[in-house]
Image (cartoon, rainbow, N blue to C red; front, side):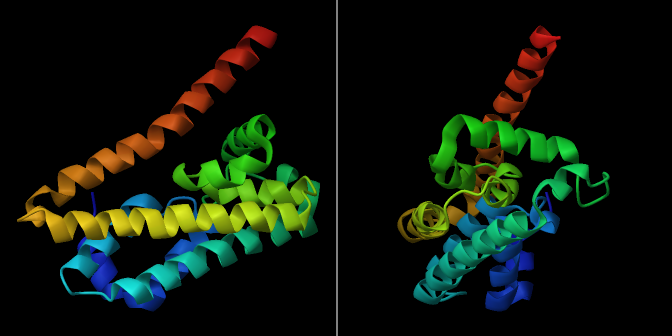
Length: 200
């Protein structure tokens, strides 16, 4: 696990904005550690390294704008995305997993996907590809962005502010967050493989 604290201190507010924006809707952002990044940022705010209110506003705006960028990219490029060859930044299986999740959960997937790595990057793109009504999308987008960016960051802040020597437990907590965030994606991926195998 790379040093998130060092990354956040080096990146600063603009760096955090860029990372959250990219992970929320750009193809190159799927590998960023969004959940643990927000949580750790909130923790650092409780220790006086960052201003909590500025952090909450920036991450929320970045999350909403990132999803919007993904939506309009999907709307403009459309089906061409599915014909794109695999590369370091793009793999069709990521898109297939997100499409299955989107088809199952509909509009609310824009909210639910916020808490699922990889899927959160591709879901707004699929919303655009699927010509989801923008008014509906932006509503779910704002709600999801608030719950994710503000919620996870505030959780990190509260931990740091209320638990003595919380920095001693930070790495184990981040590890748990990463594992918990991966489990839903892993479950849906295994379920998708099983259903595809049964249909053959």
